[in-house]
Length: 337
Ligand SMILES: Nc1ncnc2c1ncn2[C@@H]1O[C@H](COP(=O)(O)OP(=O)(O)OP(=O)(O)O)[C@@H](O)[C@H]1O
Ligand SMILES: [Mg+2]
Image (cartoon, rainbow, N blue to C red; front, side, top):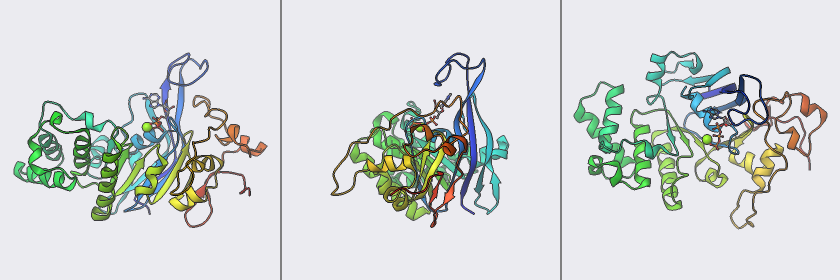
């Protein structure tokens, strides 16, 4: 089986009466908004999966569900998230208790957020913060943990001696690298990057992507890289999953999804993807709006905005269909010329 396999995940958030949350319209007294609505995806050992889709489609919520870190009010309603541990046993993360989860986070899977670099404690030396994280999870001598942090720093391109400095002595890019070092500190098999470079300038972004590519080939790490930016995908990803309104509408290799997109939504996205030598087009806007998550519709969530939608599309939620070579699409329509 894959390292990680998410099946038909549904996650909702409580939204109060009358326009609570970000849903539209007057709701029932106590409503829930479906942030993730039947998402399925998988990550193979050693691969980097790019997760893309417009703002609010459920990328972060999916990532937080994997680590069982949903904020208060968020709840997994159904589905399964199976993960193959280092010892080869496959467990459903949704069935884990708190103690098991503590052993799982950082050691098996960790996450780097866009704003992670601001999560460092400003009054504690950067290296000490990572040493403490290691000591919390493993029985190690302090000297050994300190040596490990130095090696990790060098691994992410920061001089080991700078572990003694405070966060304000680091640039933004260095702080983000330090957070990547922290995410690697306990040797996880899966690292999730949720827009890990969005707040950084393009030069630093390029360095971080190079680092990700190196880590992946040297440590055999698996990653999920969440991004808005399709041009990031080609840099480091093997496969792509495209989310729309809480579901994965298409997934496959980079070539399958970006060069031969099958889902009408992916085709719109891919049309704005810049190609070397090609003319640069601005993303076309898609008429209509994403669906109201407080009232999930039975059919395809893209149907109201899809030029090819038929009656059937509004009534039946399409299941992922295999097109060959691992290319999956959730669309009832056939390919149009
Ligand atoms: N803490 C929360 N409380 C209520 N609703 C939430 C919460 N977090 C997310 N949501 C809702 O869940 C939906 C999915 O949000 P999510 O943050 O997962 O999207 P995203 O794809 O990561 O978007 P972005 O690209 O902007 O980061 C959105 O409608 C959002 O408003
Ligand atoms: Mg997000």
